[in-house]
Figure 1 (cartoon, helix red, strand yellow):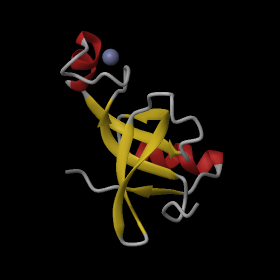
Figure 2: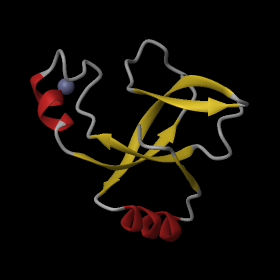
Figure 3: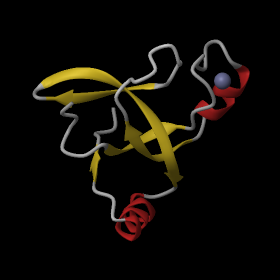
Figure 4: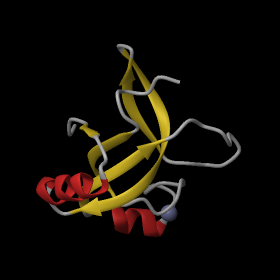
Length: 97
Ligand SMILES: [Zn+2]
């Protein structure tokens, strides 16, 4: 499956609590207030029955949603890049909407 040029993306997001989202979960609502840079591992949906948060990405020119797992959160872009270099991770930065 061809996802981006790397599985790893960096995006300014709210911390993920669960798949219910801010409208349906008190903790999600609390988390949604503070957004930070999240280093995300986008993964093929091998277990469709498991509810995972989704992120919109562009694959071969088409916008689509893929499930992801959060690897780490960072306060600044610089912190994220430093971490990625140490781990040998190549990531794409997704535009902040
Ligand atoms: Zn929640």
